[in-house]
Length: 336
Image (tube, rainbow, N blue to C red; front, top):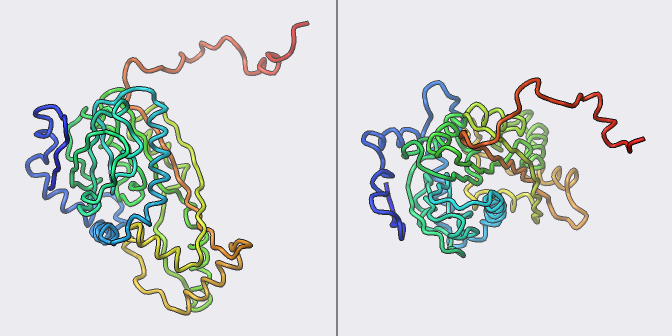
């Protein structure tokens, strides 16, 4: 594990953020799998290599546009809470695309965690003055004690988790009562243009198709997952971000540069040249813009959940309503 210093952090704070005895091996095992009994969809070791490779590119910053945009929108939601968080955690921070939009009067100290050491080492230059500390850890095995953080954020990382329900439960555990989780992940309609074009091209050229785009979580499942993890006061909203590219190869090149290549176990390693050419023609015909560009849609799911606390608002007692639903239509009518 590699830890950098966090300026002005309270004495003794680093000691309990270190890995607990015996947990280091568990985290290493988690890179290639997940807990027993959970779906093992993604090769976590492959995802680590992909992120390290992307972070090592000399021009890696040119592929950060999507993460920067989503990170700024997650930061906006942090400001909407209108309180100061003494200690916060960024799960799957990458090169820290959220902290650069935060100020110390909102977050006093932020812990950045990721499985990719090179991503952490190449963290973005901060615009604000929030002290940070870097923790090399797998998102599926958070090495923190319960009731530690006032705020947990995550941006474009959770869609690569095998045990998403388990990770959300761990996030709930490390939050203090009345702490809040604010996250963003890609949804099920992400890159539907690329997915459909590749499938149709392989059906035409090879008589069948293989998955080239990873499976994503549907928006209808997010609220259920947060509820199962014991969060309350839930908020889930969806935004589509569309990016225009010169061609299909540029779409795939940028996904590699983002570290967002497919890492599912059932992925197909080779895509034939004929299939790529056919997919480019289908992409242009079905989805191409008038200016010749290729649109790629990223569906972003934003979620907010609170750890229960006695001070939070609670639903009214059943049967305590004073107005019938049948009378609602008359409430806006002027008095006679």
